[in-house]
Image 1 (tube, rainbow, N blue to C red):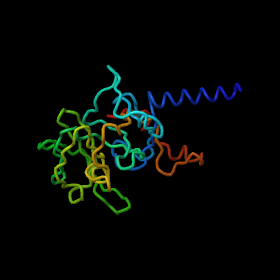
Image 2 (tube, rainbow, N blue to C red):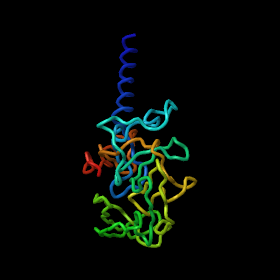
Image 3 (tube, rainbow, N blue to C red):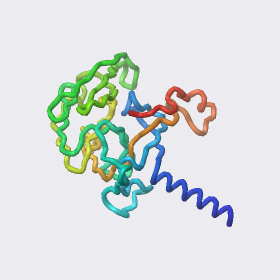
Image 4 (cartoon, rainbow, N blue to C red):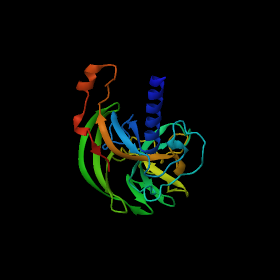
Length: 242
């Protein structure tokens, strides 16, 4: 009985911490490069945007909307890296950068991001040829300055990609527009819900990505101890996310 009680309270404490404070996530793809890489293990703060039913495991329908903590929770800011539930199934965890706030007009024109009719200023930081599944591709890293002055690093494969020109997206009230930092390798709000993300309801936000705890390059496995050391990326440990 004592062992059972110890296990029960340990699980209860872990559940409370996961719901109220922090939640770990693993990055499964390259859609957020150059800031997040496949194999990064990140921590998300749950209190940042308040709580919804998606803050609780399995998203039980206990209440609608969001519960904000006075003096602690705040509205999401443009440029935040956000974990949210994919709107088309309300089950899959996604991570993207928040680019459009309610009421904003978002558009890509000739590979340039426009917010409310104004081009977002960017500066090229580097370019190199990278080998991937599609052969050799030019990869360009840029630093964008968002309207409020916040700077973010993005990655682009140059002009001529399907998402380089889009219609104008008018973000509905109570929703947000998400784009991956790896602009030409991200199924995000530029694609409708049948193929991508679409507009993300405020209720679907889980929390704000805060820090990379540790990182393994692809191929690492918990069941293969040798890979713990051969695939580890210590330079990414404890990286604070912006």
